[in-house]
Length: 191
Length: 200
Image (tube, each protein chain N blue to C red):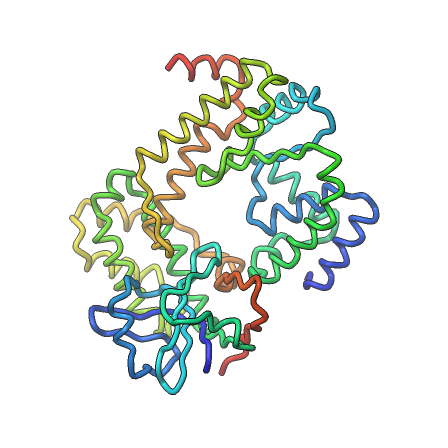
């Protein structure tokens, strides 16, 4: 039995956990409301997912699959998210600050399109090799390809152009997980 | 560079030397609450002075105080920011242990909601409990703020979900900034502003 901290990569029926060989029952994730770039903890045994935990931004974890709390039985969790965490932090930083340009009403109106754009970006780029300095150009291209009206695209791109590059502090931040009560150790030295 | 052993040592030393402000500021950074206004006092009679101090300062002032306290103890705020949650929680527990005697001897207030509308209104709860010792006009301010807070959250309909997407985070940030403009700034707690708010 192994525990992994990693990111979801999902587009319709195509689902992966970045850095983990697809378990034979990966399709169980289709029924769960997940978005690309979402950090998760998966528990696998004999190439099968036997447990799944979702993680809140504040690090709180919620088990949504599995009969028992496997984290009590395990001694180590492999943190595969560290491979992509800089890209994850950079994409989130730029998108959060870009979307800030919208009004409260627009957040409600364009909720589906915003989530679709975020999913597309994480699906296409979180696992890919690119320099953080290229990210703005990539995001502008994706906004231009999105379903938004010309007016919204123009505003989002104008906002994005004004955002300063993320600091090293922001990029280095690991995924927060609150493991209070567990004795499991996080191994970040993953090859 | 501060690792967890260094920080444990600093916590123990600060506690031994009665440097409670350093412990409070470090806890604030560890809990991502570095801009939350805080104050401690001994007697309930000090309430008017305490609130006049809280109202006279902006949120940035409290963040600066916390940062300065960390620097006094040679702790880097950046190191705290990038520290994994697990390690932070260990240190928070340790600080809470060290602060327990101090807290039982003092009244310790943190105005969480002033800097973050997604927190609980602890000040209002405190004022309700001590309504008899509080001036009516002061109570009216926080009653008004509490109403305004509830109204804001009802109007904006933030969905409760485990994972916050970028748009949901952005919406929350927008709401937070809007709230801080309304109730975060010290000028909004001045006598004239309060009357204006109540009238409006």
